[in-house]
Length: 366
Image 1: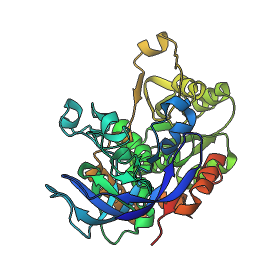
Image 2: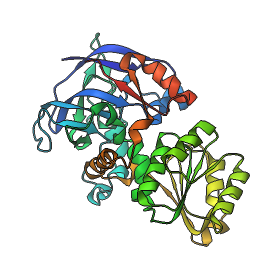
Image 3: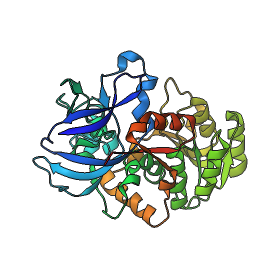
Image 4: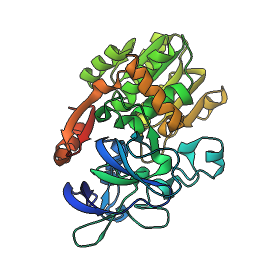
C-alpha cells in the first residue's frame, strides 16, 4: 500500500514529504495507521554527526500513536482496531531484557537505529523502487502508515485522544521515568532538574507526583522557568555554572538528594553534581559529545552518577500509568504540545530548535 511520509535524504538537509510504498507486516509486526507523532531531539541527531555517519534516506519518528490496521503472524498482544502508543524496540532475549530493563537491551542499536529490521530489510521504498529506511526505534512513525515491531506497540485506552499520546513513547516517559524509576525520588526529598524542555518539564511534573519537597528547575530561558514553576518547581535557577551550584546549596542547605540532567552540557552536569549532598545521585539523559570530567575525590564520599535511557521504563506498564496520571490531572504533559500538520515538519523542527515550542507533535493526513 502507499503512504505519506516525511523522508530525511541528507543528514543536514530538510525533510521531504513523499509518497512511499509500505510493505505488509511480517511475523511479530503490526501495520499501524499513525494519527500523530511527537518530534524528539533524537530524531534530529544526524544534524550533529559528520555526514559520513548518515545511513541513507530514512523515515524517522519514534513517538507515534495510532490504530492497528493489520497484524503479522504470531501477534497476540494487539488486534486490528486497537489504539496504540509506539515506543522503542528491544530484542527480548538478552540479559538486560531478561531483567525487564528493556532500554538497556544489549542489541539496542540493531533493533532501533540500524535503518531497518535486524535482518537488513526495510518496510519502505520510494517511487523509483529504491529502499528507504524504516523501523527507527522499531516504528518510523513520521508516516501515515508504518510497519512496527510488536515489542514497540503498547495498547492504550480508546478514550484517550491519540493526538496527545505519542510523546509518551519516548521523551515524556524518559523525563518522568528518570524521576520515578531511575532515581526513585522519595516524598520530601530534594531534586534538581537541569533543562526545562519536554524532558525536564515532564521530570518536574513527575517530581511533584512523587511528593518531592524541593524541586529546583534550572534553565537559561525565563519563559521555561515560568513553565517549570507552573508545573511544580518550588525554586528556579539561571546563571553561570558556579552560580547554579551556589544557588542549589543555598536552597537545600546540605546539597540536593537527586539531580537529573537533560542538557548534555558538561559544565551544567558538573554544577549539579557539585551541588549534591555526599550520598546524592545524578542521572544523565541529555545527549552530549566529548568528555565529562569530575573531581575524583567528589566520588569517594558516596555520590553516584548514572545514565538513563527511556526512563528505565517497561513501556507496556509505564505508558498506561502515565496516561492514567494525565487523565487524573496529575501529570499534564499534554499542555506542552503544539500540533503541526505533517507537511509542516520543517517548521516544527525550527520552532523546537528556537525554543518557541516545547513539544511539537505532527498530525498525519486523514
